[in-house]
Image 1 (cartoon, rainbow, N blue to C red):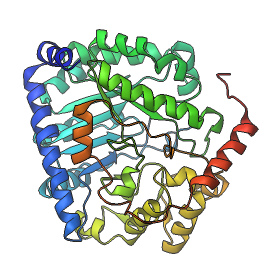
Image 2 (image 1 turned 30 degrees about the horizontal axis):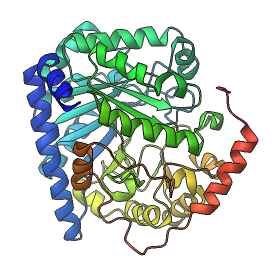
Image 3 (image 1 turned 30 degrees about the vertical axis):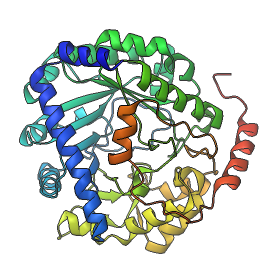
Length: 425
């Protein structure tokens, strides 16, 4: 498998783009994590990876979307975005995840990418705006990997994404990206209506044949104003996805991303470990994209580092999440998020202004923590990388009681009894 992957990288990529990835994302990304470790030892804090939602607008209306895509457009101001990236780079960061809405609807996206050739950007996109000209410009810039979302076959894609002809338009953007030899990825929010179509060997083989270099299978999280809990995976289905990811990493010449497990297959939450946090289009600093509350902003008259170090809300979130579960505290213990929001008088960061009501209405359910069913990495490369650069960073301190396993397991069983098998049958 490693030889086949090396052959793909050698013959299917543009070497200048590959070097940009290896240097800006690979070497400098590792260095950023090492600096993060040293900061933690000194009692300081700044996340090595930032995820930034630069615009709320989107041309689609996906099931379960928590972004206010239908609200008046809010595009993050160029000066604020530029300053945030510059300050993060000064602290050693080099990788930035760019989200929306649909990021390519930000009128100055390509300009901001061009301003930072020494950084690397992963753009989460539906692919509809990656025209031939856009793909050509991304190749010229060389510091971008488009991560294009595919949510199922033609019928499921239209249903999941609230429009028509979604898959064809997405595949057109995918082909444009590959045509210019961009390091292109495909992401899927795995739910009950697409798990059987996309979490399988034939789909991965098709992506390899097309020239896709990596995939990301993340599980659907029922949050927001239209949560669609009937789409959420059961614990058994989540285990199936995890096994598929581990096997694909060991057997297929394609990269596979996951953000919720260490090298032993033990669950973790990136926000709880402090490796990443999220900034929304209004500049609010949130624990993660699905926790739409904040007490801090990048627009405050202090440095970005001081904003993160001084945020009691973010610090308490990390401590509470790590002491409560190794999974997603939003899904498993929404009651604790309520307590945190009340304690800090955190503001609702949505345009719709209903995040508090949505939080109070959430029913507890299981997430990626599946104690007793851990699936360790089979691939030596992934085991080594995760052990050293993507682990819990001692956030889950040994001997610290975790409080949510059995109650959440019971809650999930009740929820599944109520909703049945979901739309996929």
